[in-house]
Length: 126
Image 1 (cartoon, one colour):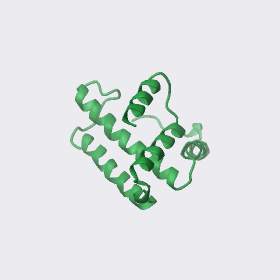
Image 2 (cartoon, one colour; image 1 turned 90 degrees about the vertical axis):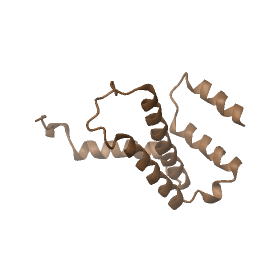
Image 3 (tube, one colour; image 1 turned 45 degrees about the vertical axis):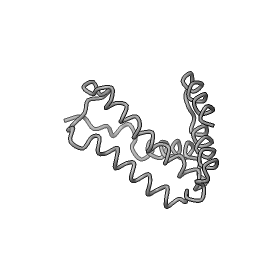
Image 4 (spheres, one colour; image 1 turned 120 degrees about the vertical axis):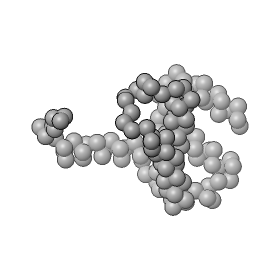
């Protein structure tokens, strides 16, 4: 099983990874380990909140951070990638367990936000 995941990572390096692909892999990952019984919406949400806390810790004492993280070392960037990935994976799993299409919901939300915040209301930077 571990080899199949390594192969998937190699194949995924050449293309964008879809939410559906992540959802399917997470479902398989949980199923083969017998973790489905623990993946209730509540448990997944609490795990997600914990991961967001870990992500927040990375930025806690850094002050403002420039786009692209030009002053960060490779170890710090790798740590950030890992914590962002944890948040994404729990979010995708939570949506799946709740029977929601996260990609479609996100696109719908962008449309709603565009209506709520039309382009004519731009705020100029101060």
